Image 1: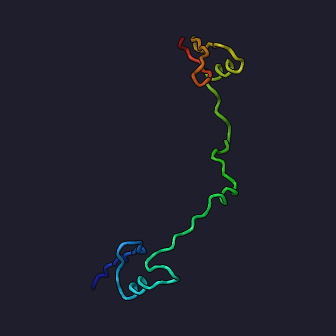
Image 2 (image 1 turned 45 degrees about the vertical axis):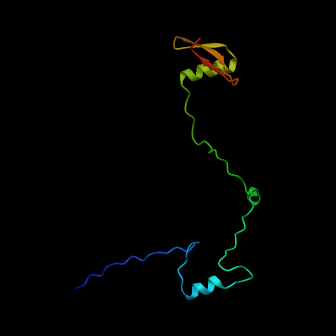
Length: 113
């Protein structure tokens, strides 16, 4: 018995520029002018304007939260209480955290003087 060997079919991609394989059919197509165009030249595709796409609804990048939020830890609870009341400092774990203003204008609490 002879075993059949499977032969892979090679997939060829469409020729895009460069030297084409010349046979009688290709020579005729290459050198004959069709529709007043010079032979061997391709027409450029028209690009769609992006303005038409803007009419579609934009999807929001943020996902909606499902389920319950995680409970804040004790430090964050103390800090938020101080921030909302406008306190200049608060105590947590035996340390005093003082309010500090950054270059950007943001207020933070730090335990360093």
